[in-house]
Image 1 (cartoon, helix red, strand yellow):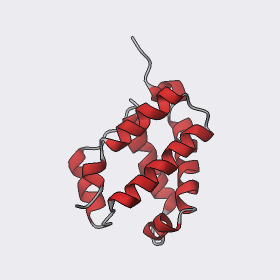
Image 2 (cartoon, rainbow, N blue to C red):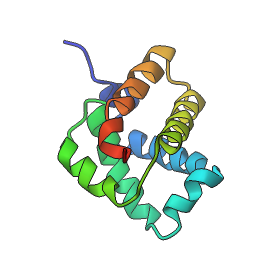
Image 3 (cartoon, one colour):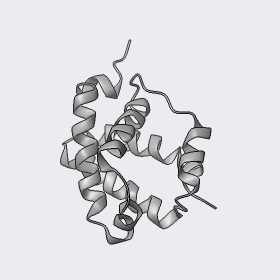
Image 4 (tube, rainbow, N blue to C red):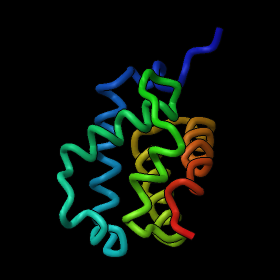
Length: 119
């Protein structure tokens, strides 16, 4: 039986550190920072840690419908999603994840595009 990336990374606390660093990178991008001006970042990081835990094979669970509902009002476009994905990949590389893990996580994130981006 294979171990999930979530477990390989060390579980929730390790994923939380990764997500916190990810949002440091996101907030450095002017095009993205404006999306978070009125956001409680502590709460967001908590939710995003659970979301990424799910993507990595951990215990949290979000439905695609929940993702769509939460992101609808944000009017996120493809350019913003692409930049966010680049920040994610950069963060994963900063944490020295294997190229295989970076690709797997990036693909998992990409699989949620249609529920995050407003078309």
